[in-house]
Length: 201
Image (tube, rainbow, N blue to C red; front, side, top):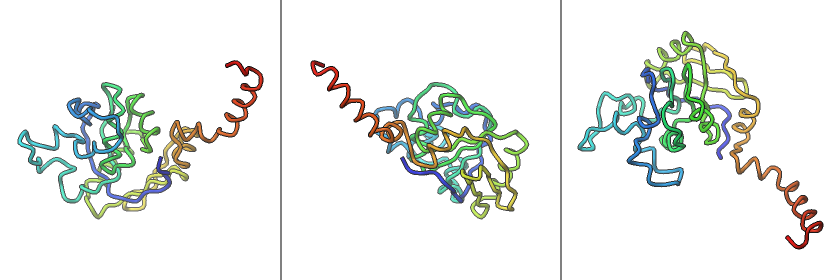
């Protein structure tokens, strides 16, 4: 998994509340267990007309937000089903951080497992970031995970809280497999001792 340290990029404003995982990646596209290839269908029903043409006024179709790396969203982001394809689609599009007042628990934890930083902030601070994101391409935010701050284009630093273990995993690019591989020496030692103690197994 790619390490998450500091990103400075365009933030897209999406003030809708209760964006569920089916809105993020509709079930019709859940045909693969690979983690790539889903970005093109991110927010598919809001992003495209039925004939496949883009809906011009959808935020990620606007020229200034096509390369967005940060998403400032409304309350209760990622609710609905527990599909891990939702963070896969977000990451594959290029978004590395989602900021909201709240997230559904399963989606929230799946983000960390897939290299995305979900940040929970009070409504008044999300409002500040939403307004900043609405400035467009020239308003670039900085998210510093080590310092635990989001800095607006005007230089206002907003602190955020993050679980210490999840922070460690993101900073070091550790998913569940990576965490296991950190213990490979201990695992090998255990297996060797177990084989000697129970050679019939």
